[in-house]
Structure formats: structure tokens, C-alpha cells
Picture: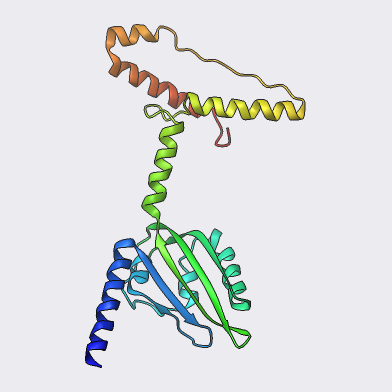
Length: 212
């Protein structure tokens, strides 16, 4: 029996370490009980020390981004009504004020014709999403000026032409040129040319609305 208990402790320790490395926390809740169970890694992902707050739904929902809180509440309410599962991405604000992006998975299980337990996982995917956003930006925006690049323009132009054809409308494009830009590069150097381009981009942006 002592050997089995020791093996169980080792297994739990290995699972906790694997969750820490993967930044995945797990939880489960017997709906007839007032408290759920949150793993130590789940507390850490939420920006808390293990056991820092009672593992109840209200404490978890309290740190969810207000704009995403209602949809999560609705999905959890549906799981309590009937067995099922869902996966969802949402933002939280930790106790230190840091915003993180989580991927959550939850499922419910019934017994005797009623839902008895909810369980799930949360994973911190903040860095992955930031890396994806950076790759997306590098693909569509100029690294020097921050303006949309040629590929982005072509994609938007194709969409605009398609919309105009469907609606029977006309569109126009405008071309802007920097006079004597080559002379700046040749006489003052490319560093000066970069400054000129950056400043021109800033001036263009001041002429645009956020929705443009």
C-alpha cells in the first residue's frame, strides 16, 4: 500500500511538472459541491499563488475580460444543463494587472440523468498569439514605416474591386510620390532617407481615421 501511495504521489508530481512546462492548468467541479478543484498551475496561470483564493466560479469569472465574460457564463450554464463540451479563447487580467490570453476547454458529464461534474483545462497562449500577430504584421506591413505594404494593398484592392462589381459602384485609387527622394538618399545617405519615409508615414497617418 505504501508503495502504491508513493507511486501515486510521483505520478501527480510528474503531471504537475508537465502542466507547468506546457502552461496548462486543469480543474474539475462536482456541481453539488460549493468548491471546485484548481490545479496549482491553474492558479499560476491566473497570476495567483496556489490556494490564494477559493476555487469558485465567481472568482474565476471576476478576472475575465468584461467583454468576453457573458459568453463564457452562457457556455458554462449550458454545460450544467446538459452534457457537452466547448473550447474558447478569452482574455484575463491577472492580480498584477497583466493581460493574458487563455485557451479554455470544458466538458460536462452526467450520471443518473443529470449533470454531475464539469471539468476542463486552461492554457496560457499569450506568447503564441503575440508571435502570430507579429508574423501577420510582418507579412502585411512595412517594417520601417508601419504602413500597409504592397501585398496588403493588392489584397485590399482586389476585395474593393469585387465589392464594387457586386454593388455596381466605382472605385478610385490615389498614387502619392515623394519628389526627389532619390536625391536625398544619394546625397544624405539611406539613414536620412529612412527618416524622411518615417516622417512622411506619420503625416499620412494623421490624415486618416482609425477606420480607414
